[in-house]
Length: 265
Image (cartoon, rainbow, N blue to C red):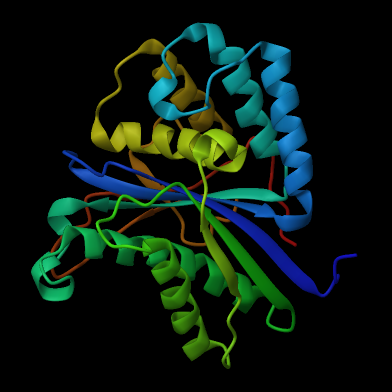
């Protein structure tokens, strides 16, 4: 039986815009560990109900025939308080690669990915300082020339959190998982794709436009050309801003008006 004093999270991650894009981004689905079985069963049920046989992946959103499945999945996500989405969007020409990353894009991307994770973990630890926390991270294979890049994320994340929270090491594992076999990564890919499609300005078909609009409407938005307030907990978009590199912030922050309100507790 799970210790009720421990707050345990499964974090499923994906990335977008690795090659030939003006922006790259990282997404993370945060799912309460004890609800992972519920999500898996519900995901399979939705697929069966709609006769959806493909992998749920943004790049495969090509047919309006599958819109009922995507619409139900997105609505399911927004109605469950035990699952949230946080992402980081980085404009490549705003990255001071030479100053901080040894002129290495691969290193810069891994740092930004780790920054997304540790920022959200830090908020969880601050919100419940008297509770024990455990984070288990699933990643779609990280596009990196470095061996064991996922293990590096675990070590770096724990080192960052150790320094701030009295020697805690709440990241219990970072495991590479095949997205085809991992519905939580598939959901992350879908939501991150909907966000990044606007930033990349690559909307290519009516099905993608429709899915993007479904997500936006759940936020009370018309489009995704902005980020969210830093305290937004259900669906958080973090636009990486580096003042010395970018004198004027190009992106505005929009208030989220959730169709299904997220509780404060």
